[in-house]
Length: 173
Length: 173
Image (cartoon, rainbow over all chains, first blue to last red; front, top):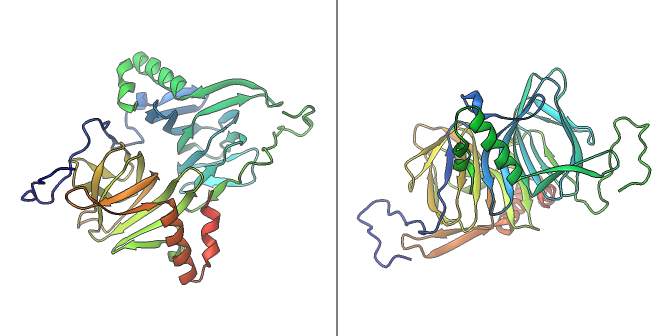
């Protein structure tokens, strides 16, 4: 707490702690540069916003085109989603998430995301905590993704497309 | 893990754990019913989406109209913001968040949110973790908000406007 704030400066601004991390500000989360989208599967891409290695979660946009499917996976931690474009549903639920919908997915869910054929493109803001475990129809784990696999995918892709591997660093906290 | 999945049911859906919480699905996060907005200060409202009492955070839409100001406050934990409508800035930063912008605010920030006079309305999706501490120009705490003050504000407001205090329960996890 400063002893003598310079209140002649109006409004007075409190300093940030010297150990604080910098903020991330991305003016256009849906990017104009197609190279920023990282391919993840056929017709599926993600765009990193925050890759949080100190708490083990990631915030990204997920883009799916032309009746794409995101393979069956289980979440041991919560997921938050906000649909920016298009429409999708989970095979395991009877509701549909539409543009402007918010979804909280509780820990313990195993689900399969499907974009219907009449939707050309869906883009959803997702915060995924911890890990997603890909599973077979018996629930056996066949693979996983976490913030570190995401960082690796971004780094490789950005090196390939000429943005440079270090482009991913701006999203890491 | 089920021993004998009924794979004649196509596609086979894995059951959720019996202890799992239900999901939250809100088709129109920006509500048509004005009563869902909870007044917070002059020209400032919030709309709860997830009030997470087990982890101590909340996800909400913040709506500010006509050059509103959100009093100076400090965040000891991260905040994620995604602007759905309008434009705003912090007195303490030189950037502006616009429609479609994503912002990660690092733990340790003290800031004051301002909506400029030419913006009739801004709506931003915010995830706030832990607590916000309102502070005076010397950094001394003058008040706070956490998921429990939010739950109380919602309950009182929904009782007042005829939705019933229990309306808030659907957002609590």
